[in-house]
Amino acid sequence: MKLIDYTVADFLTELSSDSPAPGGGSVSALAACNGCGLMIMVSKLSVEKKKFKTLDLKIQKSYVDGINQINIYLSEFKKLIDLDTEALNILMKAFKLPKNTDEEIEKRKEAIYKSTILCMDVPKKVLENSVKSLRIIENMIEYSNKNTLSDQGVAILMLYSAAEGAAMNVLINLPGIDSKDLKNQYLELVNNFIEEASKIKEKSLDKIKKLLY
Image 1 (cartoon, rainbow, N blue to C red):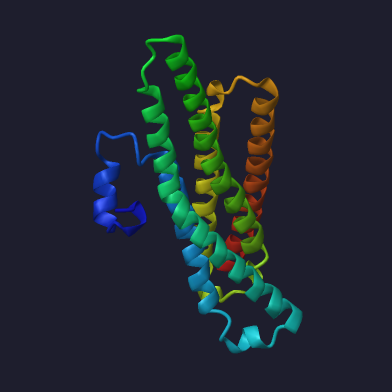
Image 2 (cartoon, rainbow, N blue to C red; image 1 turned 60 degrees about the vertical axis):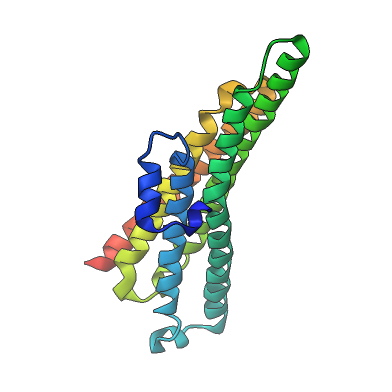
């Protein structure tokens, strides 16, 4: 049974067990799901309002296009909840491979390396899509139903937390990468996305707080 199909209670029970998976990576993907889900709700409470329908048609189209993309990201995040746990399980199996001969040692080393890359690429996708979602939401705030401002704020916080959490899950696997160039590529990507996420979060929350009171 996939994690995405668990009840909330069952997921929390599994998360609280002594198994390392699901862990922070899956939780980051789940946080991103929550953020996207909230914004989809916000859009449904906005697009049918008279005020929204008086907006320029280009603005309305941009808003709807944005939320359609958020829906796509939500579908991706749902898959990534399980993919992160699967990646960690694959890595754990690789570490348990025999190492009694030179051939076994080499085979184990290669399996660990490939699994490590997988354990980085899954959260990297969560990171990238979280920031892309934040970009969209930043431009939705002023056109959304003002009664949903707090929901929008929580959505931003969820996606920012997803980005930060995913970044940590990339960085924790960096020591398993031999190539200095590849390490630097991942590090640069993470730093750039987190810097952007932080700026969008601060700007968006500031905008929301000014509209709240």
